[in-house]
Length: 64
View (cartoon, rainbow, N blue to C red):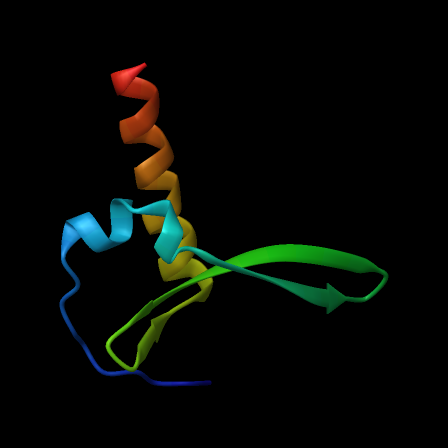
């Protein structure tokens, strides 16, 4: 297991889709499209990135 430090990221950075970096990961027979959110030498990835991007999608749906 990986353990990461705690750091803050401006909400504007998370909301800006230009900061969402896509990558493909092969799991068994499937290719999964995952996203990372890099910030000042740190990288938000995995479940944390997934939760933040779900939050971003929810905010955009409310604005629509």
